[in-house]
Length: 259
Image (cartoon, one colour):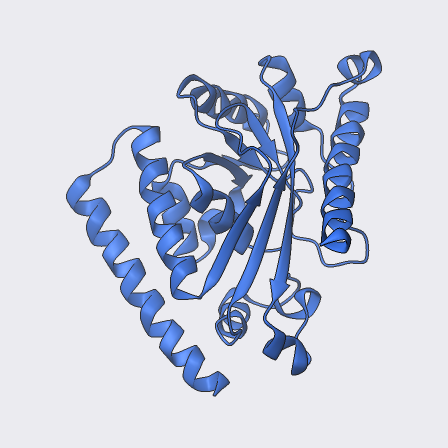
């Protein structure tokens, strides 16, 4: 049954991606908002083909920066499907098959670690997103994370760029909920959704065998209010941002228990 679903989902995804490519060739979106709207539509269709339901909690931010924990490339699809946005991602994403091309066409801002002009390029790309009134979304952990803690320490660079631009920074937290039949057969978010050392194709094949998922995206009601110490020290700002994201996580766990 799982193999049949994997083959069926593979076919659906292939057609959806092909349609997206034809769509972008015909429409030729030039502006960042147009590209963001295109990839948002593609991501909505891809998640629907996989029977993944995205549920938002709290007010969805429509501008400024949005930060989130990071488990998988699926996180990108989820945030994009909620509304058009601009992503800031590590440069390695460009090398991934299909995903890399789609991210480039969507106007993603790429950051190369250790590159001298990377910070200025990130600032320039983020500034364009702010000017277009698109939420600039990034994952401060810097990579996907498989572990016992809800989130790893945050990198400070993009947080500092948001603060320097005078834009609000809204914390969010992603939580994946597997279908009961997948839980019954031993599937877990840690082993079957989070992207660890497994290759992209192998991981994607495994994900397509899941029988649907509910993906909860919790947004804080207010942007982060930084202390005077955080304004003076970007590393403190990064930790305060992480604590704000963890607070959203705690609220989501509490809500689930009450429910």
